[in-house]
Image 1: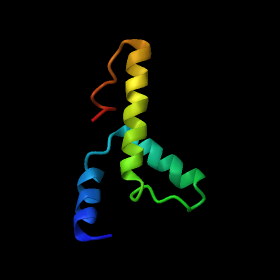
Image 2 (image 1 turned 90 degrees about the vertical axis):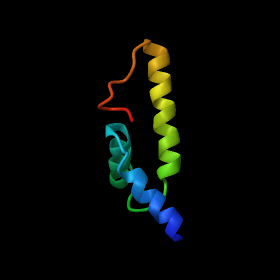
Image 3 (image 1 turned 135 degrees about the vertical axis):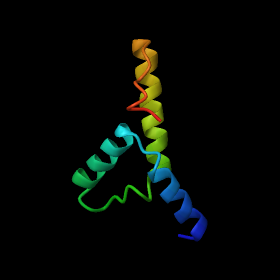
Length: 69
């Protein structure tokens, strides 16, 4: 990992909301140590953003700011 990628990972870690943190915790618990959430940050962001969009589309309600960045 070069310095730019490491800096981006650190910057993104500061922007994690509860959904992102929950996904990271699930990966650590059920990934049997094979999944490193910091390396998968980009994929995890896409997954959680899609989940938010589907929730908002299905319910017509916005996710509270506390849970969404």
